[in-house]
Length: 171
Image (cartoon, rainbow, N blue to C red):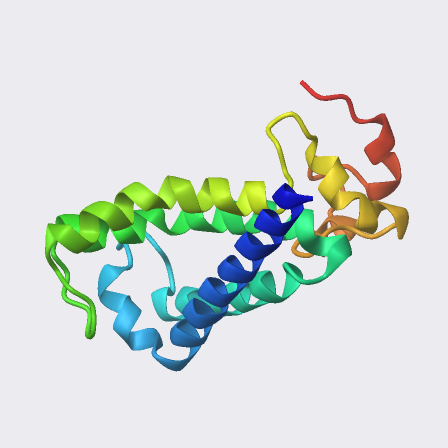
């Protein structure tokens, strides 16, 4: 019971964090441009999409059938944005309203793995659980998870149709 309350509190905190970050990405995308790694194509568009993803993740943390999927996706998201945080720190890129010193960047970079772990722990996703457990709501409806709908039309591209997911064996 106590752990359930702790996980619920963590989900609320994560939700508030990602909602605030998503709103910031959507309302001030240009302030994030300087920290985008140069390898990222269409950086302004990517910033806007990340804002939408953060808000969607914040909302999904409150939808019981999406909680585990939200945890996995937010953990992956935090991992994917880490390079921008690293660039921000290593090159002392100035962003309006944020400090540039290592007293800020050091803990921020060190806490990124904690944020990844927290997203998984708060949504009760352990290392031993399979991803298909998080995708179960979509499988039962015969649909792909969000972001994978194109797989329905991917003919001969190595994509496994949802109907055959039960027969896929892990490597």
